[in-house]
Length: 264
Image 1 (tube, rainbow, N blue to C red):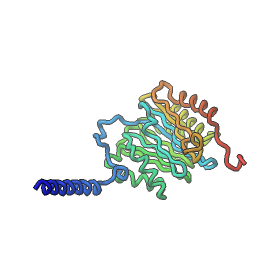
Image 2: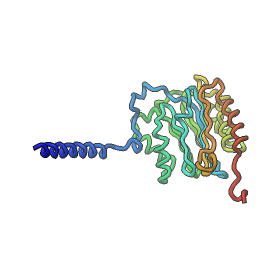
Image 3: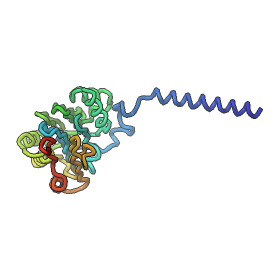
Image 4: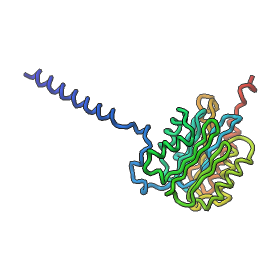
């Protein structure tokens, strides 16, 4: 009798586990769906900012530079993978746009197609802003019609710039022109674009944080990964100035590697 009860309990337990497993398998995977926030989007602070995403066709570096009146903006906006692309997600940022966007780029979608796919599955897309450049230098930018004014973007050869809660369109125009004229490493050109955007008015609420993220295959520490420059200024009255200072120190300690053919 006792063994019969144990057997029945065992069968019931197996059935319950099987049912749970079945329910789990039918649920969409979070990483594959650009869903809305778990919290109401209106309850979240907007990642109001200006950013630039760029590509260097000579070195194959991909990078993002960003500045905002928002603490630790580098923990939210920049996403990149060497040989794939770079993404800036901001304005009530959907951080799933980063890893999902890179996944779509790796599958061969163009930046424009990636943005269409991301925003199509996001009911809060009108509040989002995103810029993407792929490993071929193709750019695309998107600004939802409910982003806080002024908001907009601009694309050019190997780059895209975008921002929200800015003093006006002159901010992104200044960034674009500065990047096009700048010389040197990609990281320096990206920071120069931030400087120009700030000089043109920047975020109309002020300044707080900035970040630079540059990737290139084999250029990370020890050659073990692609994280070449990953510099963040989380809370500073002059974040771009501090970002440049740290960047110059970083260049001294970790100079740009020579191309493989020059090392032979």
